[in-house]
Length: 191
Ligand code: 4DW
Ligand code: GAR
Image (tube, rainbow, N blue to C red; front, side):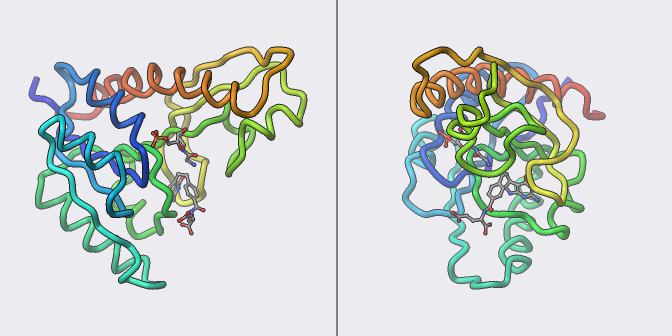
């Protein structure tokens, strides 16, 4: 089976991107990394791995999210991308883009969805008195942090945990979970 051609969309440090690059084997190949924020560490990580890395700054597009997404979509099509993985990508995608990539667009979120959508998930899991916390890989739909769950990884919340200790533990789980889910997902897509 030929490898699925994957684009990873980022906005920052790219530690999940790194995990996806380090783990890629026979089912997927990361051929493009796009950041909506120029100059971020994730772009350098991609280049260091010999992967094409492009900054597509959303700022010149102003409030016109669709114009940004049209250019992003054209780039993905140009590179014959089959699957798109968000990894710390922080722009909400409009129905235009989500529909264009429906069923081929996934994200990782640092909580056990449907618990704690949005930001500050680690502090909120602590404040809620949750017994466990973790991360979720899910299909991206129009509603943010929703969509079918592809995989989750859990850790108990321990006495003395802070948002920082939890964030570190969950990030390690993310780095193990995301490559596994992306590989499984790539396998399920039709050739
Ligand atoms: C996500 C959700 C909301 C924002 C940022 C990230 C999680 C993953 C995601 C990214 N884009 C998405 C998703 C998703 O689950 N579903 C869809 N698109 N449709 C968020 O509110 N971002 C704001 C900007 C933040 C910033 O630039 O710092 C924004 O206005 O886009
Ligand atoms: C990760 O913890 C990811 O789960 C989170 O941003 C971080 C990106 O780190 N994503 C979200 O919060 C999406 N709403 P990374 O750039 O080092 O992969």
